[in-house]
Length: 92
Image (cartoon, rainbow, N blue to C red):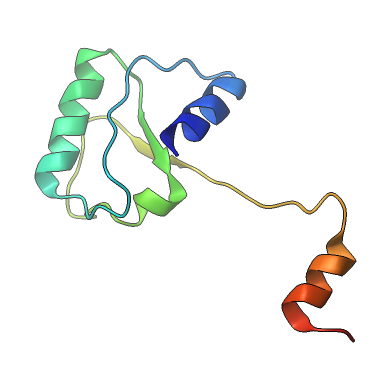
């Protein structure tokens, strides 16, 4: 859901100057990274931001001009932790 990622980035105070969407679970190629780098430079971006899930699919041998960063995500249970635990692991 790219719109959720875009909203999260905007809510963090970052200014999005452009974006490129790819299909989910795509293995990125060296050419993809070069294309993203070129687009980011055209937009005068200071970095390229991706999800943590997609960052692991990026080829490590490619050295982009701009820094590529990933947005880390975490899960925090605000209520119902005991109920979730019993569903996952059974009653203690």
